Structures are given as structure tokens and as C-alpha cells.
Image (cartoon, rainbow, N blue to C red):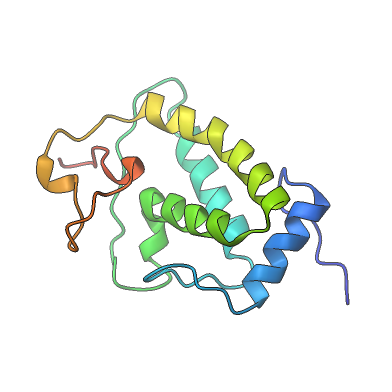
Length: 141
């Protein structure tokens, strides 16, 4: 097996666990398609969103083509949702490490975005409550 390398800011053990699930047959939930390299890209997208306009409040930006498997993750809420799906299938030690990393990013995301007061955003098409990161204001709301 060749060296896959570590994912930005994750230990080599955590990175290996991520690579294994990305190359395996894991159930990532109802619609996430996690391919090799996806987790690193989701983390990059999350960090890039939080680097925008330092110190200022942010609004989410909807993907231009939300039904396209590649473009849908341009929406940072969907990238965060996919990261959460990865957390759920990781082995316990790797799950803890990724959760610790996400805790800091999530705190900044909550602090720098606005909650959406529209109750229509609180539940998904299936009637289940949307996760908190999907209930934030988007540009144009």
C-alpha cells in the first residue's frame, strides 16, 4: 500500500481511517456520496468559508446547482453535513479526533452566521428537524 498522506490538521492515524472509509463501502446517509479525497475537500471548504471577511458576520451561499453531486457541496452547510456523515462511520478514536476538530470550526460557524428565524427552514422535506448548520441565513434570505 502506498503512502496516502495525512489530511490537513489530522493525525496520520485519523487520516488513514478516513482514507479507508472513503475507499470502502460505507453508508453515508440518505444522499451523501463520499469519494476518495472528499473529506479533505469538505474540511477545506469549511475553513475557506470561515476565512471570508475575518471578524464579520457571514451568510451562507447556496450552491448554483444543488442537484449536481459535485456542485452541491459548494454550499458550506452541505459540506458540514457530509463531514457529520463521515464522523458517524469512523471508528471511535478517529471519530473523537474529527469531532474535536469540528467543535472549534462549528463554534466559529455559529458565532459568525445568523440563525434563520423562518420555521420552514427548521425541517427537511421528510419532516425531520434539519441540523443546526442548515438553519442559518443564506445570502438573499
